[in-house]
Image (cartoon, rainbow, N blue to C red; front, side):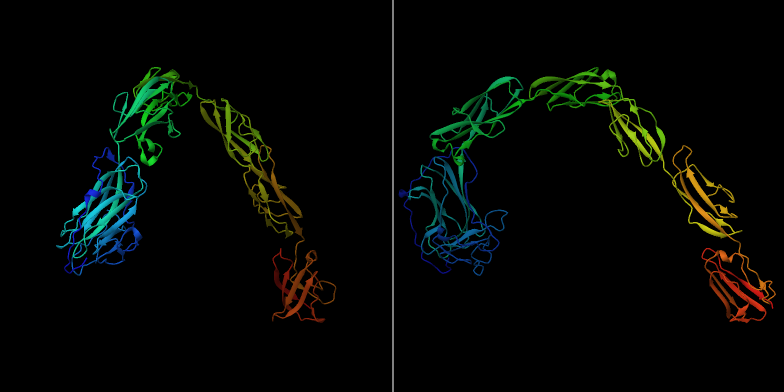
Length: 634
């Protein structure tokens, strides 16, 4: 584009050198087989298209003879306000590119590309979207589309005529049709025969080639339909017919195929527009057929042939009646039918039109045959199911509650059915036996499920385990004659009785914590257990009774042989005795450790004066220390 005035030289296209095909297309448009949309990307400008144009590539605003691959024209020639500010043609594709071409001073090929192989004998629609970018009075684009063979033969040429300059941008779709001959490798050329200058600037996008496909009308037994129904195990013949648009193919070829669930395969010899499908006692299912049509040389090329919609011969399943199985009196009967269009159940004093009816509170009178009559796609068939109603299970067990000793077993017996299952399984010899041996370690409620093959009931047996109680009293003790000690008996676990042996010298033999005052050494045993002869638990404690301790409170060490030493009766029974004697000033005047030694009233071999002295005596940890005073008399 040039803003300054230019001299416009018109070039005339000599149409006599172009072969035009004016045949009207037969059929309907299919899906595009070629779609040139210049791709898409994350940047504003896309890459060069190379030798597909005689224009020069620029990733910016193109000048005369230049082109850009861009998402939009925002900012291009805004300083002169002569270009529309647009985005690419494709809706909902913000990343899509278009070709922006600024006409060259010398006319040339705006775009040229080789097409993928098209189908011979097939009519295609060519279409492209073009927008005149120039919004002022100026040169108007006039674009010619040429479809050629690779040898240069022009199959079709089509001109847009002058595309007007408009104040509002408008994408225009230009389209034409052409028929492919035997040469299928073609070239598309988009030529701008006008000169560049003030105007003649375009955007191009979404160039497509779309085949016309023939219209196929289909009939079964001369009726316009593609589905027919047949009853299971019945017979029938169906005349299938698929007519292709007249004159679409010059030399048509036909092939019927069938599909029984594992894919389409050719039917040998079925090469006419009609085919007769014959059924003798068919199995339920959907049997499909279709016709393939093409030019004779294209019948094996998927992209170049027409396939009819499938014909479906549906073989309906016969009525099928079922029930939920044998039921017990009082339970629920459930009837089931295969899917159909309508249902009719007839049974003992019963009828229903539901598909899967439910009969509650079964009785013996409800047992018997139930007939189902079902209609599906015009097929009326029937089937019968037999309902059995039996008496419920009546469980009998030998015990409902039983007590055993720890470590013992008990036989559990259940009857009333044909199969048994006990739970939990811990401690059972055989959980599937009607008479398992139970040896639980703890109290356990065993539940037995009893079945007669149809009905099921449950019963519980509670097995209580008398576990050996754990008895403890404590450590052996020592007391001084005349003293008492409290026994601390403890029993862990269940028990029915306990007793002390012997019960002598106990203030309360029926207490777990009696007080004992034995005069001599003795062993007490605490026993706990059950009245049924289970093993008992016991523990014992020994009480050692030491001689009575007598501490004199005076003595006279005057050598008369009477009461000359301070002696403690019974102290010799203790191997380790600590004795300390202090005067009234707190001074230690006598100390003895180990076997008791009587005190002679001396300190360092010398007589102490008559006075009151103070003592402390520690026999062992089992006895409380003794303290008091002594009156030494001379």
